[in-house]
Image 1 (tube, rainbow, N blue to C red):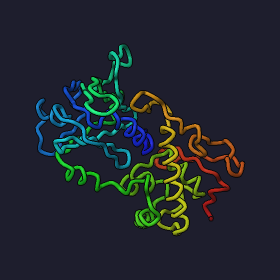
Image 2: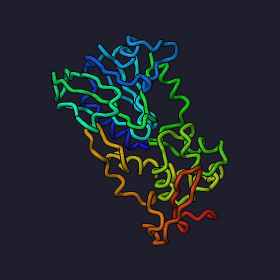
Image 3: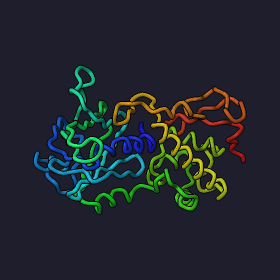
Image 4: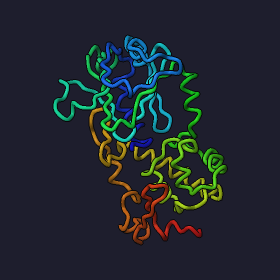
Length: 291
């Protein structure tokens, strides 16, 4: 499932096209992927308004794994990729065959400023397994209300913010990192990577971590997530950016998916276990639970 770096890289790759673009029309093939704001009836007119038809894009935003598109009307549309979701830009003829399936929402767009002036193109939301979706909000206030349920964003997490977030839970630190209400944006990949880099055992009690260890973890989270974003994110199977390009961060993984391989720091074979149904990989020497 795409995590913060994948969503942030997607946002950055979309920005030059989206910001200033007019949304001329939309084809909604599957209404179930769109959630309207509270109280809005699920009729065609409200779907078109929620999806920005007749509006223009003024910017994008992100919190954790969620990306928001802001319209001139003051409305917002939040994109959640789920496991297999993608948002891509099409400049040529629509695809055929397998690639033409699961195109749930297709916008007809026109850019009116910047390097692609007065150029028509399509924005496509595709999600074969339908774990992702689009959620409409009538205002920034409504969006902020939904995002207030998320923890601080992991890309810029500070030592003090992380220490506060972890102080309320005695769960294993990896479980805490995966909880989006504790820290927004980290999933299985970057939890393993950041814990390995900070030399913290995944089963260590979150609230028992000392301030220096939390500081090290916050620093590694910022570093690893930042580098992964620059590398285009990690493509294990489905993730692609706005132009269908895979990410390259997977080539730099030190822990995730490397069970049985030597630790890049000490050479000891990495160990794997299951935690809340998730594969977890760590170094039994560098991430000793007793330290």
